[in-house]
Length: 200
Image: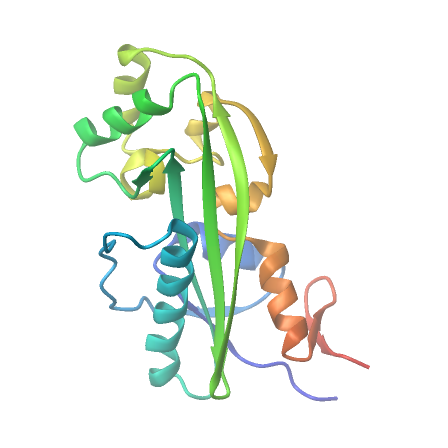
């Protein structure tokens, strides 16, 4: 039997690590050092996918024996791209701008190794319930919004803000599982519920 590849997660995100562990896959973690600046004019999906690829490739150079998984998530509110808030005040601003409205979440995943990089983007639309400054301030004060694109975590306390979702839930969490499994299949490996096996 061919041994499955060693997986390395190019991310400091505990959520991505938790989701891979949930799948029963063992991964090493090596956070990358890449510039995440959003250049003017870059489309949100292209931005997320480029960063996911850059993160995976940065680590792949340093872990040449592994397959490296990179990811990036952006929240799109009309023409405005929402990254991670830099302060509670900025988190409140983001949250209030999304109150009672629908926004889009784009999560890219990349798989680098063996001299090639594959990538894909998962999508979802999320609708927030209507709330005011007091609730936004109370949530921002928990600290949960500070390391999350758009200033909220759907899998945590931020679930109380969400009125509905259409599309891939795991893209909102920050790691599009199905897109990741599709990339593995393109590289000749199939997910077998807790392990990877070669295509027959």
